[in-house]
Image 1 (cartoon, rainbow, N blue to C red):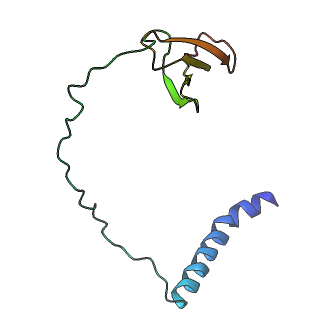
Image 2 (cartoon, rainbow, N blue to C red):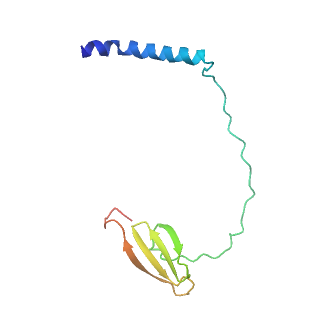
Image 3 (tube, rainbow, N blue to C red):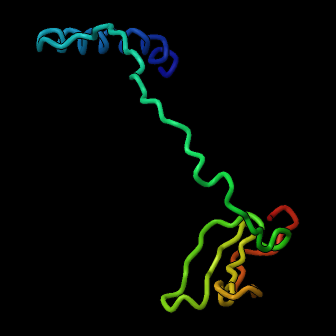
Length: 114
């Protein structure tokens, strides 16, 4: 019996497709071909305002892959989530002698993480 159903299944599917096409045509709906052109994109002038701004790298070998940065309401701490799962508190980001401490590590230590 299953073999018979599998043999007539393509015919049942074809009949259903034809019925759907007929119903759509009777409603005035039919697929149409159209060319969709890419929209014209605006051109922007180069912006080099930050080209000569000095950059200071923090935690180059420790704060790897920073994901998000939040400043505390009083501005005395900054919290950074880094790629290895740690959340780090940076003490007084306005101080010239910046230091940081790990507050918590999410997940588990894994050699393939971070």
